[in-house]
Image 1 (cartoon, one colour):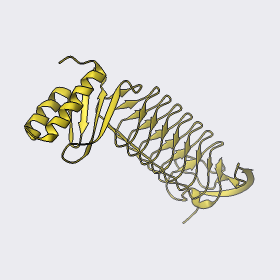
Image 2 (image 1 turned 45 degrees about the horizontal axis):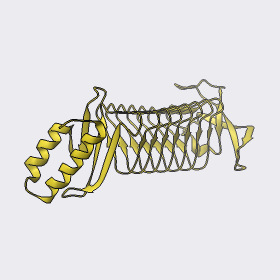
Image 3 (image 1 turned 180 degrees about the vertical axis):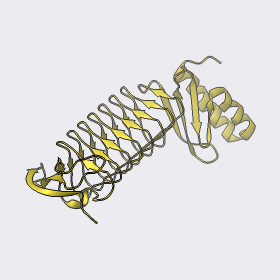
Image 4 (image 1 turned 90 degrees about the horizontal axis):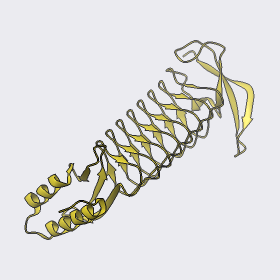
Length: 256
């Protein structure tokens, strides 16, 4: 296979003392023309010789990180560790993708955002600003995480959900649909309740309504009350969920 880039003699040394070499395009393809200088990689394996993936500008890719498919890493972005950026994904600005994180699909990570650990950002998701996504967290669909928001643990943010401002979403929380979580006053969660010891999460939507996510259930608090009565009437689990519902109503100032 004819290679699309080569390592030049131009290099930088990162804070770990690792030498990174500037790349040069050796054959024209979608994202570069022959002779174009790109960003910096530690070794050839960091960027696929096939596909249209490219590293631009002052971006660095090092460690065992891989960029492939049609992915683009640009600006002052850093991709390191065992991270993978692929598909049509874009990592740019001063963004950092590290650890065993994956960024793929049409996802974008930008600004000063950080994606680390075993986190996944995929689909059409956007992580930007000073946001952090870490641990085993997943952000996907059309979800957006931005501002100073933190998504961590086993949390999932998906659908058209937006987590932003100073919000902290962690543990087993699932924030989905049209959720709008700007701070910790706009959501709350309860672990190890019900017959399956599930996590129950409540959050505000863009219509200023409270939505509940519990197992495979997602709906309004009124629908959740009906579902609990239908499924757990007369049991200890009904009492548990009723207590949760009452706390959610207090949290969000709901009468009744």
